Image 1 (cartoon, rainbow over the protein chains, first blue to last red):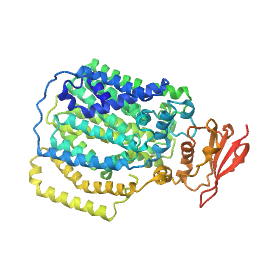
Image 2 (cartoon, rainbow over the protein chains, first blue to last red):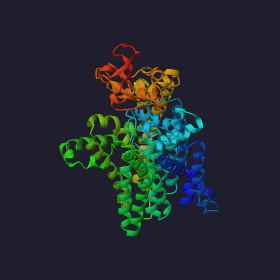
Image 3 (cartoon, one colour):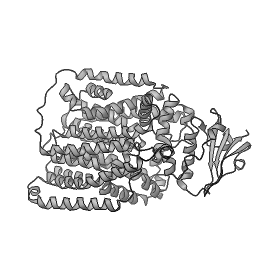
Length: 431
Length: 181
């Protein structure tokens, strides 16, 4: 949290204590993303990230808070409504879930076969031991290590305690809900905001994924939060939005391989929307996206390449035209399967139908650029997933059955986070 | 969630039905008020009611999960991951006494092991049990072999073979072998 307050403060997102209190959710997300990216970089450079080093990284990041200290503008608070009482069931469900996660053993396949073993190795072997991290038995060796780095940092203080891993994901998810509230509370229709928050708090798919201690919730949260921050830059023209979008995007790329294509799509759309007002702003958006990729994934890719680790998500795989042509029948299957998972009420209740309805309504009310931004980012992410399934070297149906419900989470959370914003009566159009 | 039922069951369906009935009743009761709202707000109210209707079932599901997970201790808790992959968590226990910490090893699984998830997860179980030893892909390059349902001598030149776990049920024998380079 201290690191995150430093990151958001240095970016100029808040100024003064009141604004800081209204930015705690987003600050926690930025702190986790920034620490994870720096930790990955330090591991690649050969650091061990001992306890004092973990504290030092957080302390250095926290120094950014100095920029935000001092009396800031005091925004007039939104009048309370009876709808705010919905915070009670949202918080109660989250607290009950936290208790449940505390008792959750490490059972999900990906978590016990490689996510947590990687964290254990970072902790027990004091860094990124090339011998162990290139072991034949290690699955998904090429996956970036933000999540294992976070878990390893926790182990420095608790010992090898896997009971806390689910709670770590819970904390990230709870911070995301808080960030959606913080950004939406002054802009959105309260009923839309609370409908989204309640749905996210009780969505069975989110609860199931949190119990699995995998990286899907963190990558989805970072991507969705980056999207919202990028939108604030488009709408408010405050550079802080773009800076935090880059920080969170770097976190997304350092968390999971699909984070890379999500982030590329996000910044391409941001640049396209910004280009309608100024080429300079479009260039700034592309620069921010490039910086996020350079910091978030490039060092890890260099390490992976240097140690001859096979790259599952290679660009060559998705551009193999003859392979794609031979497997063209996969395209409609993937589109249909992913689409069905997106609107499955047993997983996400009515998050996406509400988002679509609100987007159509916003478009009719003239907020065309905002809707274009949301639809563009979501479509890019969806197309990226379809391409990944189209080009998979594994059996398609097995791949869809085991991962589709998880990888769509990023699109769902992004759409959910933008729904309250699109519901606002009016918003300054970008540019 | 490990302990949450895969299907709702009688109580779950009852809670879902109750939630739906209450949701429909609320929407009918307040339909006039909902109609007066802007389209987005009206849609959000409908969705909010639907989410509220689902909440009792979701809470019951979490509680049901807790009822199971709070009973897990010791081996059940530590081996929950392998057990989900049809692997007994103790399958390679004892291998770390035979393989020196600096040695490398390779795992080999027989295709006759009848559970596909277990076959693919065997390497991960060995990796966990033998941490921090490094595994290699080719048996002939390894200092030791850990095999399940495969005679070590059939995949590499071996100096010595230990039977780590005898066959039981449909699970074949697990061997550890020291290779000869």
